[in-house]
Length: 50
Image (tube, rainbow, N blue to C red; front, side, top):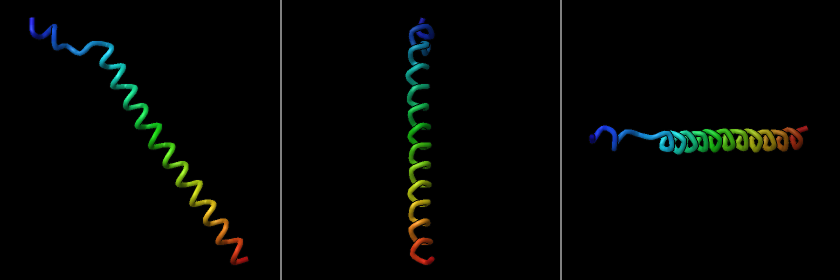
């Protein structure tokens, strides 16, 4: 009886998957934005040198 009450439902898996997906998207967003900022900084430095 206790097993059926504590068994994770499909709803719990959906919540967990959405949290994992949100964390992945957040990581990708920060990685892309930092790459973009680094690219802009390098371009500005190269423009000043040349």
